[in-house]
Image 1 (cartoon, rainbow, N blue to C red):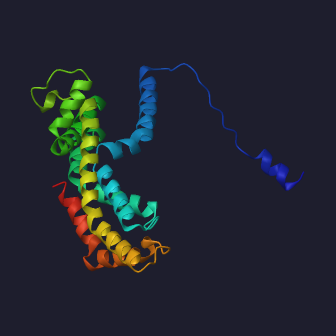
Image 2 (image 1 turned 90 degrees about the vertical axis):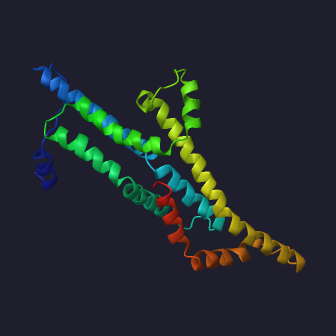
Image 3 (image 1 turned 120 degrees about the horizontal axis):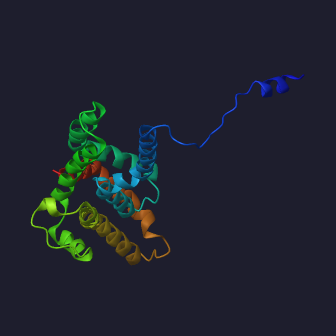
Length: 233
């Protein structure tokens, strides 16, 4: 018998069987595991939609386009920076979720349904602080819901898309302000090249060093991050 045959004979076997549950508790545990896996699958989308991530990543991407640096910084760097800024901004919300939902649930002080309700409340409060009333009214009409008398009457399925388009609007406004100084540099460089008859030289090649120099001289990263964080205060 060769070494390979002996190794193959010593391999353990793994079998998965589907049978009847012996107790309702086992069935409930199985359902909870399935729901947990589903939640983990949707977690990236939830992170994007109900936190500050959307505004941050769009502003950073627009900055890269304004600088005309193509893929510098790379997507991995922008996404990583956006994630860490998101965790930094959302820390008070996450702390409230942990103290009001996660820890009581782990201590078996509340059930799963109450934990979910307690976890949603801080996220709803965060979204209410940054959503436009006009956007809420839009999705309330689309959902054919009556006009809410207070914030508690606004459904989460109405609040989330309204919050997203509000974030998109603010991100585009900040991106427009970022483009203005770099657009001026592009226009000046293009005018100088045309006046010198150097129309075959791409203006981007000449303007890029000046854009980077301007961004570094004004401490652009510091100003941008400060503005992004302050926009959520």
